[in-house]
Length: 335
Ligand code: ADP
Image (cartoon, rainbow, N blue to C red):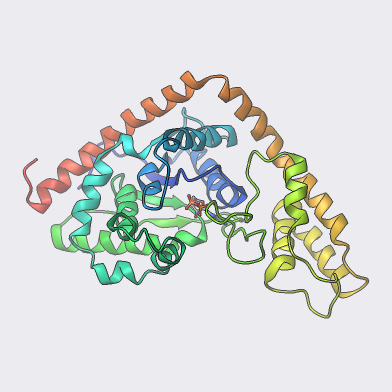
């Protein structure tokens, strides 16, 4: 049984791609969950900036290292604590890639190429349909299972990838007698934060879709001003599009009662979007302000950030090496 002697707590793993600064979707759908779980005594948490996943879509090698540090600094500013969680960068733990290679031997090309997330990326970057892109869910399964992870705090968009991780775990357990747990997604209230454009989810890779954690009040106001709306009155509150998305943000930042109030106004006297957007901007900024202040302090202390990453990598590798050694034996490779 993998790591059974050493592992005393259930494990949590999650990561964010270093493709841009964290936005409200990452924060509400993932990072808030990371923080909630790191405060539980019964869990050991590992959180990474997953830079190997970044290179599955076009990227700039000159800025990747800084983008990776930015994710780690945003994590720390948002409240991740290196005393409670292992916090590091994926590429510093090369065992992820090794395990992904072993996993790729039980996954069919057809299945990977039919995944909606793969098809979306093919549409976005038709000139960059690479093996790395096809292999994304396999590497993600390795990220998770390398630590015998039980819980993965992540947004709703990651559910199909988690299903692949469970499938690989089952296949390996059956074929090679491993003992991987079947990892479950840990869901927060903001599991799906919609895009400001009115279509799809808020995402780093869709321009104009997001509010970033470091946006100031003025920027937030300007971004909200662009959300498409309607006349503010009707028989039924729209279930999709800009208005629906604005109301979802009201619910997430100002509460269910405030959303109800806005919905009642919509079907009665009419909803004034100017007022709604102004108070929503204030509510969002109030939550982000302390994070931004901590981030400014961290920027003055790059040595501390490097120490967090190095210490995290050392701790993660210790677990990763032990798992990999056992797996290599079970699959019949010399170790
Ligand atoms: P992005 O799609 O912005 O590049 P990532 O793929 O790096 O984000 O995702 C990092 C984490 O943030 C994942 O757990 C993902 O599920 C979560 N996440 C991303 N976008 C959203 C969103 N709009 N709503 C909720 N969670 C999200």
